[in-house]
Length: 266
Ligand SMILES: Cc1cc2nc3c(=O)[nH]c(=O)nc-3n(C[C@H](O)[C@H](O)[C@H](O)COP(=O)(O)OP(=O)(O)OC[C@H]3O[C@@H](n4cnc5c(N)ncnc54)[C@H](O)[C@@H]3O)c2cc1C
Ligand code: FES
Image (cartoon, rainbow, N blue to C red):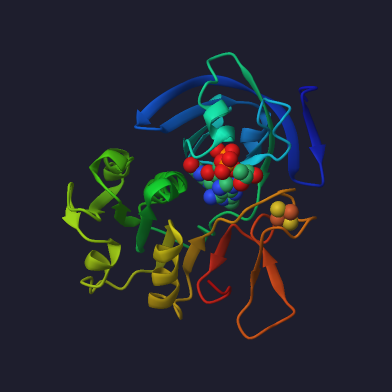
């Protein structure tokens, strides 16, 4: 095993990964390709906890895994520059190194889906990236995929072409500058298809809508965000409440980030 890759706490590893490339794919949105041994353990929907290469930033930053290339030991991350940490990531160049903890969290459950199944993917803004690996893996199994994406405006649209390789894609924008005007509910409320599974990731309002609309669906999943500190289940910075309980909570980093609809309070 590479000496840079240490196993810790069971499945979570610490590794210094190599930057293969970085490209700005939309204004302030970057695609970072990393190479390292931990790719072999990655699952769709998990995230990496990245150390900001600057000693004044103590907390790692969580970023979802967008796609996984096990043959080449590479993974892709797609992130938006929000504050100083992600701004520093955006300056990384090929052959730089990045201190990575992961792969972390429970990803999307893709089991028991085959070529008889129809699946709905719903993504919003910078929540779209983790759905790409889901689409890729389900498409390989022959699953019929319908994707509905929502963005604020045309400039923020990402991955619609990539996802179109795996099935039909509907794009909505809040201001109507691209695709259908409105949010994803405008499209989803019109469907009369019975989907075998639903996978979603997006802004809090979109997650609430999916949580309510597919509350009783046995295979509907939300990938959620919260502020994180340790990123490995120890500090309880990232907890969500569970319906009908004042005492039980769920940690986004360790119990999530993917939850079944109806299992957490949004
Ligand atoms: C499980 C998970 C997956 C994520 N995946 C992606 C992704 O694929 N692409 C992407 O662009 N963003 C993603 N985010 C959000 C990303 O972590 C934040 O945008 C990033 O941490 C902001 O860091 P900053 O230093 O630039 O911003 P600052 O605002 O300076 O950050 C200050 C602090 O707040 C935390 N923070 C700020 N915003 C968030 C947030 N939305 N979620 C969690 N912590 C936050 C930072 O980690 C840091 O500790 C994800 C968040 C979570 C929890
Ligand atoms: S961030 Fe520490 S428990 Fe989740």
